[in-house]
Image (cartoon, rainbow, N blue to C red; front, side, top):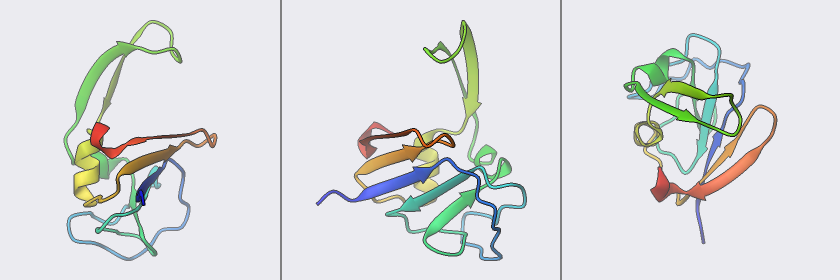
Length: 112
């Protein structure tokens, strides 16, 4: 049986007063929700919510590349997915992502 880790890139409107060790409670608008086979949460229910400031605290990295979705070469900046997964103590074998436009994709957790 494959356990699944779900990363939902969605705006979560409801804020919670819950707080987990290692992940501060978001104070800004939620931009990322991580759920599934995780041990650390900071929201009501089995998920961890992130505003812009929380992932920035994980350490920022840059990559300059071209993509089929952008014109020319662009620089992208953000935390590494593996650092985010380590923060929530992810245990799943598969990562599923869902974008705001409901586009979904899955890949093996080992690729993170």
